[in-house]
Length: 305
Picture 1 (tube, one colour):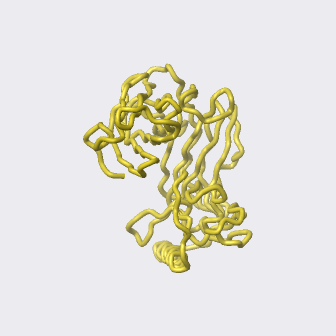
Picture 2 (tube, rainbow, N blue to C red):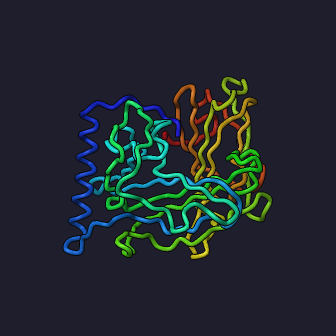
Picture 3 (cartoon, helix red, strand yellow):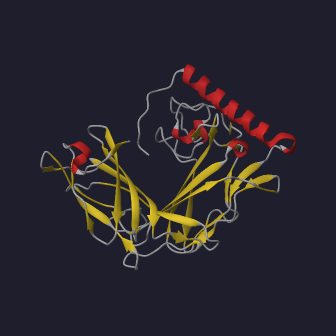
């Protein structure tokens, strides 16, 4: 969530306006005579049943039917100021929700509105309009929820977390009710515990030319693709998820995650080099070290990110 983008010009803003308008037109044509203007969209998720933490919400829709477009990953989107973290960076979640002890701040699901307050705090890349009227409640046709559990100090820190982070992708808002568009019922989900059967962790040390690197030199984002899948109360699949970085001694860990196959994004923040690895996590304490000066950070094969 810390990527830096140049200040957009007016041409970039116009381009994204046209993308939003085109997506709206495609959506309306697809609906045909049954089209209606929804007041909102809603992710029908009841949240985790245990622990405390926050949930990052991504939204997207088809961009000309080819690529998924996430407005909160583009600071040059004309409505970027409606994204919850727009005031602190050029990549944001649409919304951040919170949970604790089986309760949460979204008792009726997570709403995607057609307008939101301006969260951008006067940043130069944002509109000054307040509220920001964007119509995303009608445009959205996909979303993702990423669950970040907290440790006993009330912070997300995989090195000291005892609960697993989870992620679910949602496609379609096909349930029409209350003048809104809802997803299928995702139910609630119990976060697996560190030390439980089927829960492992990847960890190791990171060097550059043989020297241990420092704080946040390498970032790691791990997304489970298969293996020990966690199911919600309605049978919805949730996959392991972790986002972390090296500490001051060059050490990293994913923290507890379900065992399985992972797509892992690695970023050398000093060289701005990014790669993708695919690895199996099969046990707690699975070891994988990296050498940033080497191709694939010393772990071939890899893909460019």
